[in-house]
Image (tube, rainbow, N blue to C red; front, top):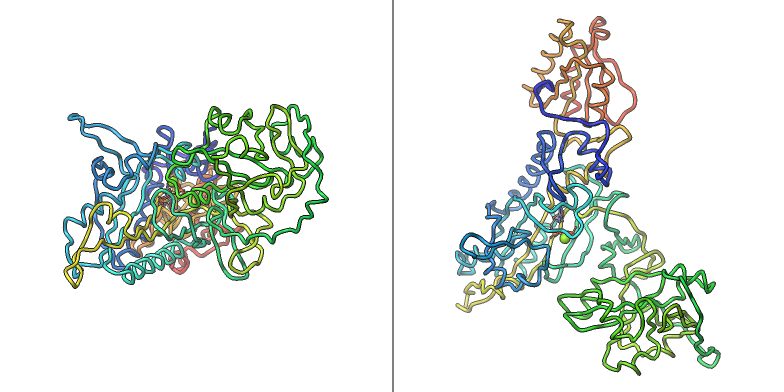
Length: 573
Ligand code: ATP
Ligand code: MG
């Protein structure tokens, strides 16, 4: 492919709203353009990478025995009502009406549609197990689209769904997909980890996320080097801290302190001269409409996933200011749970395990600009349930073996779930078993964000000059840079020969034949990040040579022109 005919609009500067390294580089290197918030156009170079990822994924899906289908992106409301998600999915689901006022949504995922498809065609255990997959556009009206194509509203996904008659077959499919994902991310050239994860709005009871490790990742992974347990911090089970023995007789009574203008945990801690771990943070939520209270230590973060699981509720939302004051009788930000049950006996108070060990801590003083000191939850707060309710963080220990966690950042690129019968039971997707008894099919679902994978590759592999593609994902294998292509017939001859020979050996070549200064050409190629660069110029051709450089290395080396093709074939293989 000649650059002079190709569409690669590179940019010196990234636009101001590009908020991550990969977004900046993808726009600068001419891979994508932004149409509107969370909506991106894929240009030829970007699309080549996307297709490479797609091909790897397709090959591994076929190898695992899954069958490719193609499902509509417009899905009828009725199916989503059957599963109960028309209301539960919330605002990420983009809904609309057609000309006959029938309601539809744009697919954020396809459990409903695939379940409907399979229930219509499969009626006997003899037709199971089966696994279907597709590549397609998904739309999620993300609350905060960001990080370029990593958290877009419209994105490209591979989604697969397995249906089985027995738990054993369902587990076999989960394992097959898990193994296929291992192969996929290995083939992409990634450093990655498979970690236990929360099941979110998809539901089900078991799941693993595949995380591409990168310091810029949105997710944090808690890792136990002792027993090998790894989980998203949302999911990571933390060892319950040992109870401290408290001598109640030694404790001082609660006193009030004025804390004007102290808004954050840090402000209060500093003003009162205590560490933030002495503070008791009070949060008010509504769980399916009912107000509930959560307490965590000042230096900890409440884990809403764990809280939701404990409450077994669908919707967990931060309470409005009105509900907060109603429930606590205090202005927002100043509620303390001491004595709360006396005022409001019905409200349930949930506290993280660590809160139980606070002795003479600090809580809201239940009036504006006032905090209470000497608050000891075991004496002063009537907690209904103590549980593991915090995000895993430094200092926490693994619940399985007690060794301390270490933390890494990652980008979630794939997710496998055991769904059980959540959808098949709700949507009556049944089969007749050997005894002619109707049973719900046992399902699994498996997603890979193909477009996110492209950005993750860049987050993991780049330098100050641009992208460094892992070879399996590179849009072209070789950057062939000709200097004086139009003015020196020898350069043109050798360049064209090398290009033709490489292409006939199945190696893809991007030939920079433009009449530009060498510096500009090298800068563009570094930005684009192809793994191998070969330069043919008047200067080298007169010695019968060319210049080779690997994108990961600093120095170029001279090669004989006659050896270049053979050497490159070796390198690319
Ligand atoms: P996240 O926690 O990042 O929102 P999710 O749990 O909602 O992801 P799934 O529903 O499991 O994601 O979707 C499968 C895959 O699709 C994810 O692993 C991810 O790679 C990709 N994906 C999800 N949301 C987006 C998005 N907004 N933009 C790009 N890719 C996405
Ligand atoms: Mg999501």
